[in-house]
Length: 411
Image 1 (cartoon, rainbow, N blue to C red):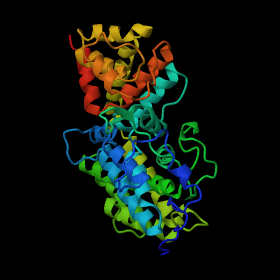
Image 2: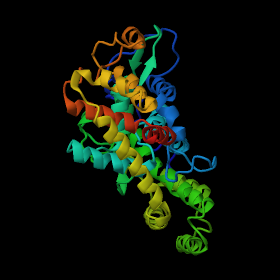
Image 3: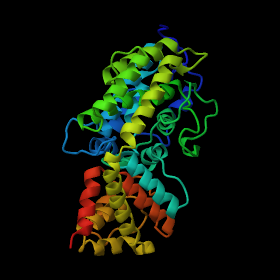
Image 4: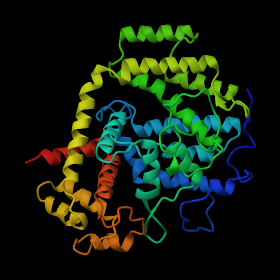
């Protein structure tokens, strides 16, 4: 295997475009004694964000909040970080950059897993005429919505580096390619218009993109077995699939180990981040197996309908409250009927508007302590308010969405 096969092209200070890689949307506060690199600083900013913490209560594939052993989106993120760190370290790339991208790659994901994302996509197309996809939403959260307290106790946006933001928006693991090589045109992440449209701008981003797929295939099988979705017949099919590729077992341990080794063995500067034809074919067959027996299983149909009911009802209820610049008072008035839904949304929305908040007893805290972008302005445009509703829904955990729905239907 070619250890350090990509040393010299990683995102280190000697990279010819390093200044662009570490450029931020706005400067962070300075610390003369900080020992962290720009990418490690991004990693800790993501790690401390509420969007990251909420991943522990977001569905990966299976909605089962009472089962501590079913993979959540946070666990998936940590798997991606582990796989990408191993591959990047072996190839001579910057592991601090892969760590930051991997940790932040799903912060924009909707509740209820991919079903929640599909519901928000349908709502966005119906009402706004444009797509919702979690990779772009991750950059939206990083750039405009997630807030951290700075050294002056002021709430500010994350202001991540270009390389990390680019890795988040470009990580789509559902697009199948034989090899991953960084793109040459360095457009801004928000200019990418659809998932999988472009490769990441860095080799590290390419590693995370492949690690995303390596990480979920085996674990989804393990969870499906644990929950009884995959039974004896499917297990026999899986064993036959393994035998076809001379693998005694097909599970998380074997898949991750063998696929990492294969990537390390076959990656070169000329051919890109890649698997051998054998393991690429195995990965594709396992993905088809998972879609047939797991992701499209009738056992998950009630969950899909349940998730859509919750998100559609919350969306409709909040959209009805739009009153232009009087929207906040309207939401606050409605909290008498449903305090959790309307009260929480009013306080959350207030942090991102330019409106006078003096009428609210909690308004002075936001006015005095929040130095963030006011992405929704004065709410004079209904389209901007709809953006806010979708942002609010996308940021929820599964349990929080259920709590708000129960508040909404309570009489």
